[in-house]
Length: 281
Image (cartoon, rainbow, N blue to C red):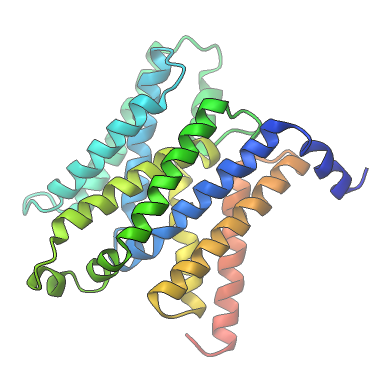
């Protein structure tokens, strides 16, 4: 059976189609604010929030909650708000606050899963949560619906607030001086990132989701200039890498999260090489 025939065979099953829909939406949403996070030097906030989401998911698994998103999503959003507030404290800088919450949540989450989990394969559960499922064919209909709803909200919020996000990204001081409530829009950005982190955990795991946010943005910035152009190219890169990664995962039985990130790394290296050849660096 050829590769194309094998892929056509798998695409006959609805849950495979669900996985591609969710993967495409998560990749698209992840790329929208990646440029903003890179330019504002908030790249590590995704990593910190993903570790917090892991801790929340560990608690949800201990209580055997069928839909752990109902716990993970609010906790991650509240943490994003807390990080924003704490980062303004002169005693605790933003990077220190992210490091504290990140490491603390990761340690407590693993401790809870190790001590109270009823699963016979704790190591497997932890590995799946951190790095994504070995198979992408495990999504439930409820998870697909939640992903579609929140993805639409994220995309709509980005489009409606595009001008404000652009202003806050490039010159926050000037925006504040002209009367723009920059604090409010920074809060909205943090909340959207929290939502994206939770949506992406089922796809690539809590340790790799920040790669979906950062790599496409950095790759696009190697060759293109202009905020809108970079965001569009970043979205194209992210979606293409997600589709290639999921396809390879199905065909070669590789971990989906690691495969998608590997595709992102390849694109980054190619774009970097092209930029050097053209003398952009």
